[in-house]
Image (cartoon, rainbow, N blue to C red):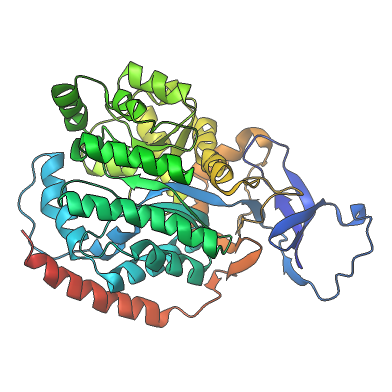
Amino acid sequence: MLILKNATVVQFDGSPVEEGIDVVIENGEITFKGKPEEQKNNRKTDEAEIIDCSNKVVTPGLVCSHNHFYSVLARGITVPIDESNDFVSVLKNLWWRLDRALDDETVYYSGMVGALEAIKAGTTAVIDHHASPSSISGSLRTLGRAFKEVGLRGILAYEVTDRNGMKGMEAGIRENIDFVGSLLENSSGLLEAAIGAHAPFTLSEKSMEMLGEAVKSTGRGIHIHLCEDTYDGSVSHHLYGEDVTARLERFDLLNERAILVHGVYLTDGDVERINKHDSFLVHNARSNMNNSVGYNEKLPLYRNVALGTDGIGSDMIEEMKIACFKHRDAGGKLWPPDFLSFLDNGNRILERYFGQRFGKIEKGSVADITVFDYVPPTPLVSENIAGHMVFGGLSGLVDTVIVGGKVVLKNGEYTIKTDNIFREARKAAEKMWKRMEKIK
């Protein structure tokens, strides 16, 4: 049993802020939330672990709805990169060289560092989109091992693509299906699986058909980039005479578990199809800015928008903040509460995959919780929670993180030893960079 004492509880759905609250956690679930005197059972709490949350803000865990942990070891990369004047050139000259240089060791250490950094930022779950064309088989289990060792929740997928040949495409399909099978055989409760794919412009009709079959046979959803820049939509219309989502729909790839990423240049018809199937559009503001692909002006039109980072860390407070500022700078009419709702929608994705309740500090919810060492200088009420998150610098004030009822960060310190992990990650990155230099 774990008890958070005297907490200020903040929900993301506009519920009233509650002060002086105890939160009791047992077997990974919240079993009580309220004033201490409201407990009417006779359970002994003598042996419970107590965390004093006086002058701290307790929230549901934060969710990153799209990430690439393999990009962690590209940080500060010194490999010579040819000048890249468009988005596809960036993919070819940097990212598609990097993913081909990944091996089992770098997959593991990028997963470990990515998971540790997510926890440090108060992020309790990451939906990761993985690619390692030279080391496909077993790569999701290697990545999943890192998630479990750190204690981070995740939904993992392997990026299926034709760009490394049809054998590579088929191996990616098998990796997704095999990983689902491994979860059915040995579930830790922390991991789930989606069916990954790069983007429609790197997928043939045969590949799309096989992806549709994988989604149907596993009961999962597709996790795919869509129209990150104009090229994707142009290829779809040139080769197939249809919008990218019409093509996905033709292969039964749109459903309530579909995770569709970027969507900067989706059409009004695309938006209608995504809403019709109750799918999720994941917005990655900082990545879009970094790649100069433009701004997604259609955000207000979607039923389900979530927030991701596309490999730029896992600090979701920072992502929410920049997404809000960029939207306002682009002349948009959404406000901080709208972006808090987008952040909270990551919990709706978790619910659809894990079949449990997420994103609430209340009895019956999964105990994925973030504690901030934040003393508000102005009143903290339901109407201004998003304002405190956007303008209050909370991302640097994460105190304690709990995932599935287990404390993984306490008083700002990891509960596992990390020195060796970062040292070995640096060695692995150096070897990977040398391999990249040989890849053209």
